[in-house]
Image 1 (cartoon, rainbow, N blue to C red):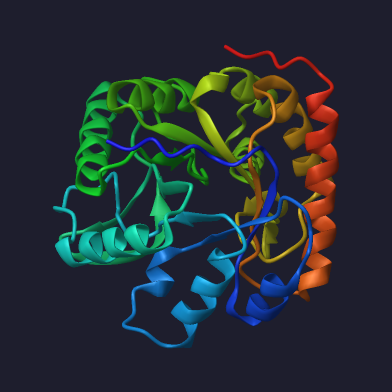
Image 2 (cartoon, helix red, strand yellow; image 1 turned 90 degrees about the vertical axis):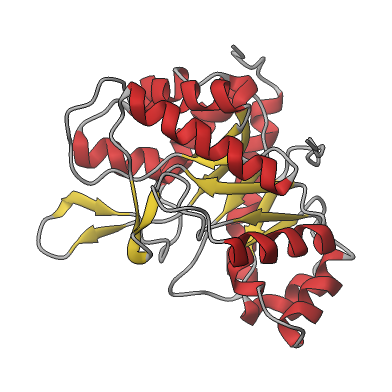
Length: 285
């Protein structure tokens, strides 16, 4: 199994087709890009050509949304083969997926749904991650879910994710916005959550914007990725980097896409927080 070395910890940006040209032309030092590989599972065409040109200049990370890692259905062989082909072609420094399920009996849902945090689910997800990693021939990292409703569990989420990672050999992609939204919605302590995650398991960090529910307002937040990163999430990112040490940090934006230079403002903010974190000894565990 391959364990590709990530680039030095720096800030990256989710790559959107409307930003292909400025992404190719930008001279921002250390910038890397992340894509959903499912958007590039096509035969030829301009989208793949642009991605190849950008990959020639910048590191790439793949963030999958189609595997349904936590599901019960067998992995889709066509999806796996297409993903393997993209990995072989573009050689991403990181491949990630979600610690969720999004399909059942071959019917896909319009969300990434969390698993019950039981010992049985730990072993199930660890087995699925191991099978997925074996198929790809490389280690992956898995992302913490967003929680909208509380439900009874045997383990808290940091314990659950840590156990899955240690049993399967995968790493963790920690989404700070997901932690903040979950904390607001189901009452967890976001700072304690971060301090409970072993630093050596964290391979990448995501930050994104969220929105308020139209009816409930700030009582209920939605992981919408359609707004700038909030000050609360920036503050939580700073705590995470002080706790885990510098890691690659990605800015996600999937709706209300602004101009490329507007997103670079957030990239520069993440870079500043990373620089501050390098001056503080990480509380690694």
